[in-house]
Length: 208
Image (cartoon, rainbow, N blue to C red):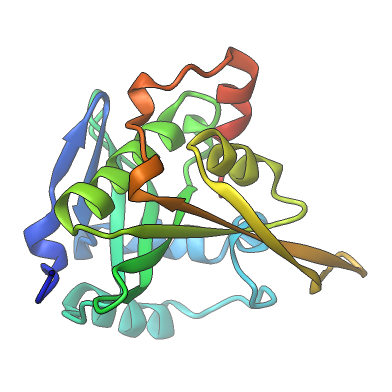
């Protein structure tokens, strides 16, 4: 039985083929600020309607995240190892230690890395962190109906569909569903051993 979960600093850096997860780094605040104020990225991965945020407000919030030591929410940076570039963000949140579960999200923020396999590799690292390092029993993911890329990646990673929140989100002058998926440790297979056809892989690398 798990008695405690490690901190972000204890979990990362964690590296795999061409990709690495790290803690949030203050030196990268301007890149994070740019992604934070990107309407398209916001549409794909946030329930909150897009509003531009001033750098001062973002800086205060980002620095709090960098210093955050709570063990129910984890934020990570995704880096390209071969090009040594910050390319996206990942999160593990709503972690329950007694019930050994949590929810994940991944966003490739740098469009130059869309369609190149980095989202899939980041998912591989994040799931290994969840199941192998933290001993979680269940990992869940939520997808918006219009975010086909994230849905493909979640399904391609072995997550099982569990239900739909109908007309959950209002965007683009219409309502959209939110779908719920989950993966149990007994069904987890490292992604490098799972076959994926090239079209599905390419589609899965757009931002989540």
